[in-house]
Length: 195
Image (cartoon, rainbow, N blue to C red; front, side):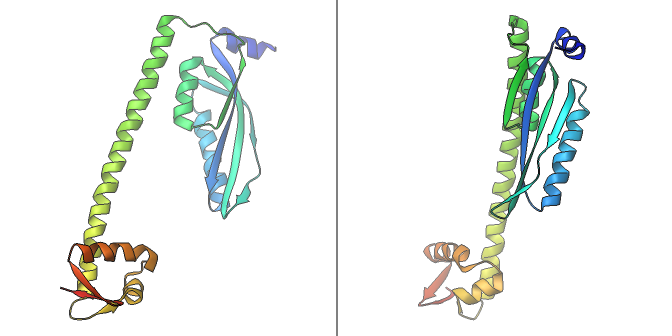
């Protein structure tokens, strides 16, 4: 153990190795985003990185996958737990100290921090779900209105509607079937038309 490691451990830091993975495309975007992610981590005063290794990107089914392995010191277990929620590493290995003892106050603070992060994530998820539901309803209304306009005084096949709307037939057929069931439009053979 060198002097730097001992100094951090004496201050209550945990020595850990983490892996953060990223998948997406294009390749340059994935690599650049991962580097920005690491730069953000380096700005955290409670985290002292001592080593970082960026892996080469690999193409997997049209997407690009890469990872970074980071080694550093984290100011206590609360910082490490917060890091997990903020940066979603795929792997964590605590290198030192080998054993840890926590007071009830440290454990309570850690659990409260964990709960606060969970509540924040829950609120964000609920907000996104509400926004998605709002968008879905409005897209449904727009699509229904567009179909109504297209079918005004004419009959169109699934293929024609798909071409005009720009939605593949496979994605449109279920929606058209629903409109037929709701008696908003009618179907005769391959053709759709208004009531």
